[in-house]
Amino acid sequence: MAELYSAHVARWEYRHKDDVGPGCWMQADAAQVCYADTRGLVIRALFDKPRVPQPEKEHAFKDRTCTRCGDSEDWAGPDCMPTAQAVDPRSRLPFDPRWLLQPLQWLIDAGPIPINSFDRRFRAKEAAFIRDQLNAYIQECEKP
Image: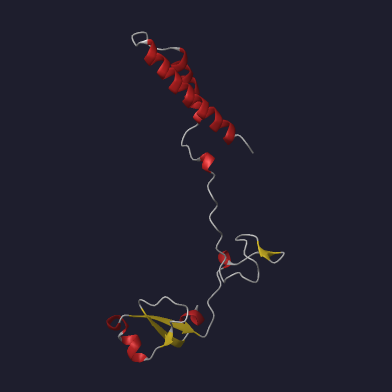
């Protein structure tokens, strides 16, 4: 702990706020460090001592590849940053689609008596379409 907080700055560097290129950092003197805000500069400090490694962010290499993040041993950075797992789009419904099958079947089979035959056929056609789409979706979700 004492070594971490007693590290001396080896060099100060600055860049303009608008610069984003890889070679935009230049060595700063005391005036640039003190008046960085008024001059529109971004300052960074470079230390002699390396950073303290954190055990939960260390790579776990097996066959020269990290088992957590998948980076090769040659290209891996100092910290292991596992990528976020992609969400399967088939699992995004907040409910089980099977719940809709029986009410849709009731809509197809039993039309209300006061409506005419055209409306009854239209409702049955729409409900059958929804039922078929849900059956296809359920079969797609059950695939391995």
